[in-house]
Length: 136
Image (tube, rainbow, N blue to C red; front, side):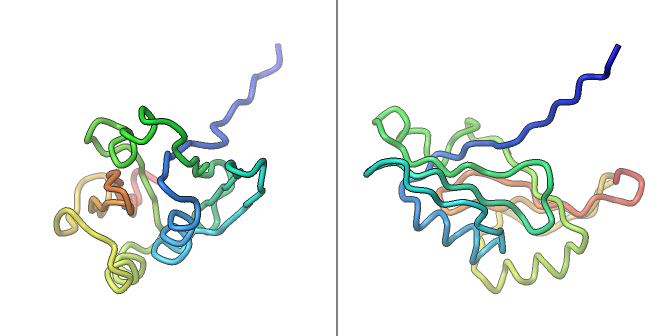
C-alpha cells in the first residue's frame, strides 16, 4: 500500500485591507509576497510566506461580511493561533523591534526554545520561536 502524503498548503487570515496586510507581513515580518492576483473587482488571491518557507503560506482574505469582519484580529478566540519559527531568534527579534512589531512580553527561554508572543497588525497572537536543538 502506498503511503499517502498530505500537507497543509495555506492558512487563511481574514484582513481588513489587502494592501495594509501585505505591507505588514512583507515590511515588518520580512515575508515574501508569493502571489497577488485580482480575481474580480473586489477579490484578490494574496499569499505570503516567511523567507525559506516550503510547505505552507498565509492566504490573506479580505472580510466581505459583518461576520467575517468581527473575526479580524480574533480568529482563534484570543489564543495564540500562529507559530513562526526562526533559525536566529535574536537577529529576527531585534529587526522586529526596529520595525515596531508589538510584543506581549519579554522573550523567554524554555525547554522547547526561545519564544515570545507578538501581535499581527490586527491583534492576532503569534508565538515567535527559535526551537531548541532537541526539538528541531
